[in-house]
Length: 251
Ligand code: PEP
Image (tube, rainbow, N blue to C red; front, side, top):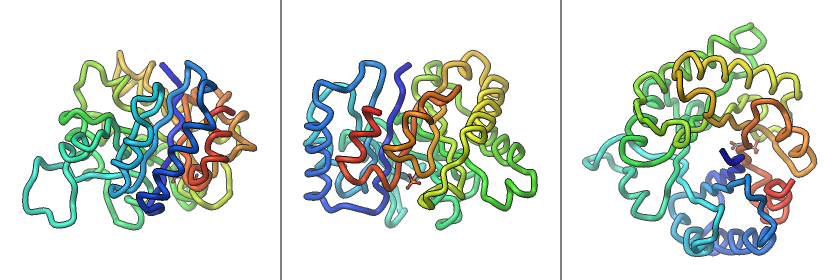
């Protein structure tokens, strides 16, 4: 399976900014994207079409959403349904990003509902999990990761789950802080996640991709991407500039 290099643009960029960044990224990586890497961009909802158009049918690039509501349609003011995202050209969505969990108080049950519903509707999902600093310090790392994985994955029954669901391990204390987890922390957490995937989803867990996220930059990508069980990265701040993200994509 290809290594996945994903850009989370959070609540940044107008359509014009998004189009310019995607166009510049495509130009900077043209003919250089290794065959074993795929790039996914998660713009804000309003810029999804602009990015989709800027990338055209370029091989190795995909577009996704940062969030959606797990219902077909209905009286859910302010929300977006999976079909609407697919209609815009999204093939992926994030679920359970730490800012959704902590700023918007989304619990494991809602994240699980999104994961199952999104997959059933045809979206591929990057399920984000990770512990707070307090949970880590109190020795709860494994309990937190196990619970977040189990709740979200137990009800997923797709035959092609391994290619349609990736897990992003994003320690909350490393997101947007400049604080990168040590290589040893990443290796240990990813090995634990792999063991849980094998246990929860036998037959799928071996091949499922596990991405690392948390202050990934051009200067640390080479180290991180070569660690055991690191099948890609999810990048926030350093993905906003085409210059720095292209170095991560090619790094
Ligand atoms: C993220 O938003 O998922 C993220 C990892 O952000 P940053 O790279 O800025 O830490």
